[in-house]
Length: 130
Image (cartoon, rainbow, N blue to C red; front, side, top):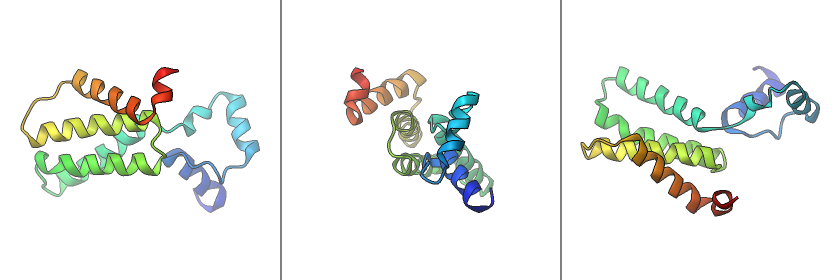
């Protein structure tokens, strides 16, 4: 990803900033049906948190010590990516599981998903209604 083009593509694929992409390139992606590679989603948050958790585990940090750095990473990513709904949902789910880990409580996926849906509706009410 060297140069302006590559750097623009890397920013678009990681944090959704597409200002440096040429319109013809974006149209080419749309025309070929591959524009989804530029979409920022919960997967991006999950991959970033998983990489951080793996690195901290390699450094000998215990699981309870990994939880809050992962939540902080998720929210930092969400803010940089513009707080779009899929990223907010993922950050909330990571946070719910982080709090559960800190409190030594088991959190099921439905609790995380429900909390994420409520938080996303609170942050983006128009998206929840439409």
